[in-house]
Length: 81
Image (tube, rainbow, N blue to C red; front, side, top):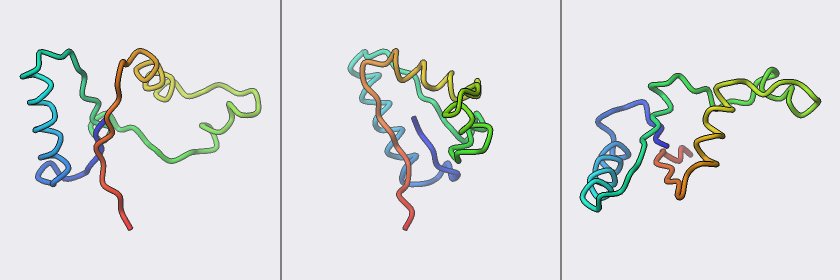
């Protein structure tokens, strides 16, 4: 999973090199670019409803399925301070 608003960032360069290594090693992989799919990482009232018996939002369920199906996960994102 990749998240950075700037396609010219250091994080994007890391993503490109990592993906190249996976490709060169003939590994199957999927890059999920969270900004491009409009994924909101903030916990909203609707998103927290599932803790009290409500429905988990579909976009969250979709990403959870990918995590469950993955053999490995790499997170490439900035740590802002």
